[in-house]
Length: 476
Image 1 (spheres, one colour):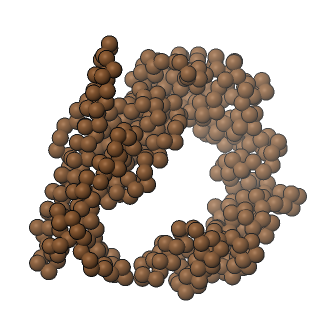
Image 2 (cartoon, rainbow, N blue to C red):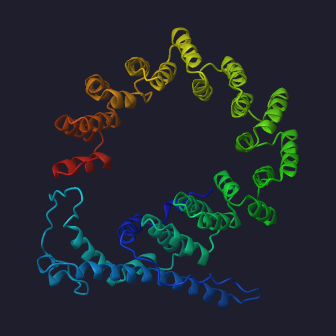
Image 3 (cartoon, rainbow, N blue to C red):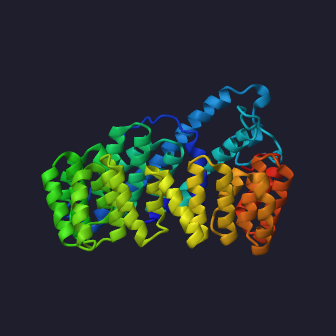
């Protein structure tokens, strides 16, 4: 999947999107379909078609501006005379007020930041100036991404879907269509989520997140659509596995298992397809996992298959059988985090005994850290803290310092500061400062953010947090 949909053009565009998005009201115009090229159309006509698309994109910006201005009009009408913005700063004057806005204002919970009105004025000036249209020029992708991102940052995925409907994305944007579908589903808009997912599928998306989403929304239609899509440049095994999972979710078990069996015989069964099979048909998965393991993995990692086998048995209520499969996996790799985690979920005592033995025979930061996690899951916090210290002593960069600072910040900070200083680790200093700020030790927190900044003066996190403290704002 391309990373381009998540870059979304210019950083400046994203910043503007955040401001515009939060102020939009409900849409008033019905979406128009994107103009499709006509067979045999000459080059000039095709170019004019592209111009039409650009005009429609610019209309979308105009619509955003009109809705914002309506929202601002409502705000302005609610102002008292004392709150009115000076005439010199009102939209259309072309000049902002010369007054310096006080940055030290401390806004109480539930109150609106008084500086917000001034920023609205500045936003009005930006929209009136036409600078946004100039910024995008003739760059369709940047404008498309800006508009999609604006609606999403504004918390309006339905509007982003309307834009997808008007301008069906190509494969480079299919990942963003999947993201829009996920947001719609989280909001309970299953019809919208289904439509966005199908747009993503038709645009050429192949990611398993999309397939899983469609398997839960409309697997039968998704299976039919997937079967009708071009296969050129597509990995045949992945396409076959995804088709099988959709068929399985739609209830076409026989056809699905036939395809899966063929993939296993050819050593082409993708790992994610195994996971989906275990989730949707654990009994069928168990039989096929055993066959694949006996065949040496059938193109997959045997230990990974043993974990899937354990999960399939656990899903069928056979915990002891699952422990047996995990025991074999841990014999091959005693420090397998996924196997230990699953063992702990089934039988915490066995997981603890396994890790206790490892900390004696093969002590390491990973062994001690996983031991601490299992102790913490059993609510044995004091012992967990000691295990995390053992992990940190074995490797200061193992990541368990974060757990120590969460569990016992006042005790952990003095012991971690020398490590941060010795290794000149600005991130560790920042973690210490964060924990102390939450624990009410504001002066020490500021001092350690300053030390983090001294080590890395280009890190915007430390600059921002120190500025927030200086202005009386909460840096977290």
